Length: 347
Ligand code: PMV
Image (cartoon, rainbow, N blue to C red; front, side, top):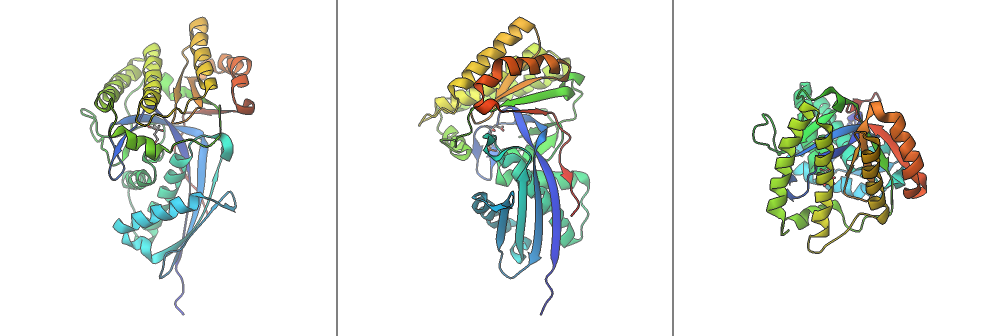
């Protein structure tokens, strides 16, 4: 009997939050517009893959120790990746995954999940082919592979700020993978914090894939794409100069434009919850009254991400506890900040 070859890889990968939003895509999961995000520190997925040589690919997936509905998506992902990467056909995959954030929190986990899985697969490819990629090659590949699972996942494999999508005047930017942004930003932006106010964890009415699809026939498509590019260009300038007021203007406009696109697509859909709007109003009132540099962004869901700087931590926490937790689901919020990117694990 031929002895089975067994390979193992384990990675931990963070989620990320976009400041300029990716909304709308073309085939092969390429974005209609460039986006900018930062990786989170605490919201992470850990994935361990055992890969065994076998004549027919079998995929087993456990999430937090139990079979999960995500298994089907992973099988489809591996099947589609294997069209281009044939070596994937020679193995079976036993995958175990867990998140640091609660499963029912209603926060998108596909970015950290596909980030972690893609990092494991590139690691396994290195082992199978006895090649040593440079760090740059390794993370670029991981970003491309993550993109095929979930577009925004391609931004999760890098620390700190990440740009995805070709942008005129930004060398190295490409639709195929994200790149780390090493611009000399004002130092305050390395101390960004994200308080994720969990408003409603019930299942979304519409998947983000379906939402992206609706952009293709959207009345405002061209205007939105131009707006996103202009916002990105200006945001990169603002983050150099440290104009915090404009920074929050821009990221809030981005978040509201994303939801405006959803509300005005055909068919229309609304992901915001009445409490999302109450929280937005309270954040704006707080900014006005306190004079602090705070603002919000929103993902494809009802949760509000309160963005602020580390130096204002105490006042912002007091504000959250006094004024916002009552509008969250069961008082739940996640205290996160800009992060250091993925970590390779032993075993
Ligand atoms: O990666 P997807 O296909 O789940 O798309 C997510 C897009 C947004 O989160 C709404 C915006 C973004 O840029 O992350």
